[in-house]
Image (tube, rainbow, N blue to C red):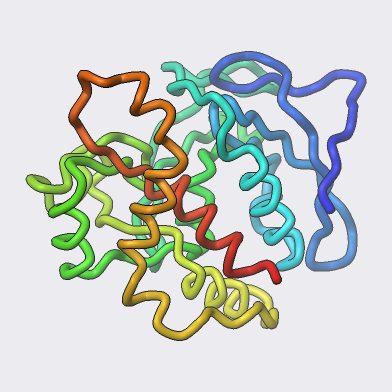
Length: 243
């Protein structure tokens, strides 16, 4: 299980500048790396090539960690973001992989990169694009979603892709996680229950409705219904990947 380590000189978050938590994870070659995580900003700092080294079991540990912090207070990213090593502004860009398009923030001095939780999952192939029937079904019940690629709010009734990063609508899905783990390292992940994909939109809405019920009651004048596919997806994946 990942554990929090104390460093003599902790890395500061590129966004909020507060000390990040260092968590140790096993690599595919049996060594260990420490990832710096800011749960308030929902981001991870990777030194060069660290994002390529996580063992499949460590990915599951990371899921557990994100699941435990799913209800933490979150805050928007600052602009600019700054490298925790040299304090230079991080270069904002986009990368494209088979599972979609995601936002990148890289140090121009090559000290590493900052990734939001959702962008890291897109990079690793742990999401899949939503089908048109799923999008139409979700649009009938909610007004907006938060883009899995960049985190921006999107009017799912009007837009056919994220207007901010142009990513197709995607979601964190147990079947996609299972396939990605097998593809990256030949890992044997728990099997996803049959038929789950057919009820995925329902499950996401129920999970998110339960998670945000208190907040919505506090905003009685707010009739907008917004689903955080990332937060709901973490919950859904964790339920599928644990006994």
